Amino acid sequence: MKFGIPLLRLNLLHDKPSNLHNSMSEYSDEELIQLFTDESSRHFAYNTLVKKHQQKAYYYIRRLVIDHDDANDVVQEVFLKIWHSLPKFRGDSKFTTWLYRICTNESIDHLKRQRKSIFTSIENVQQSLAARIDDDVLYDGDEIRKKLDKAVLGLPNKQRIIFTLKYFEEKKFSEISAITGTTEGALKASYHHAVKKIEDFMKRD
Picture 1 (cartoon, rainbow, N blue to C red):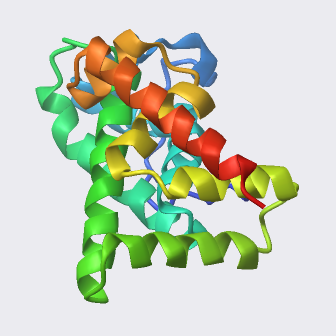
Picture 2: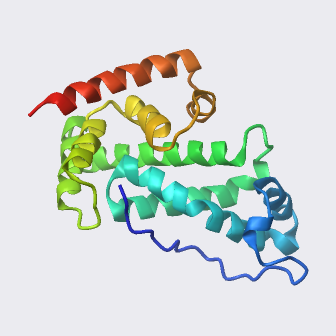
């Protein structure tokens, strides 16, 4: 599934220090996190982290919340949270693992708020999201891909997250475990159940 990439609407107007090279590809996440601790390079480091990771964050979030504008809003929340939380980041996991954990939690919170705001069941929310796939002018998948996406939407949230991380994001179970806080054994069982449900859905007329 391909979607239009949003422009991140964050206040990133500060230029990098003159003694730092312009190419973000030259910096690892670890180096940027270290630069973030220095007041003189903080905004450059943050801006570079955003540029490096906002696209993958957007695509992942979009698969969970479906709607382009909703995904864009969640991306804003994710990177604002990173701005406030990065000073506390101790590197116990990779930055990308931490990023996906925040993306997952913010997406779940968004879906919960959506459900409460319209006083409906999770099933009705899923049906509403499925309808948005049909109406989305940015969606360019074929009918088989559209059916797959609707099948994934029908999964319980935990299975949908695990399936999305494994199938679409191509994460290893060890990293999914670090993202979700679930044991690898439990993840494999959930993924197996998710695949079986999707296969059954895809066989329907």
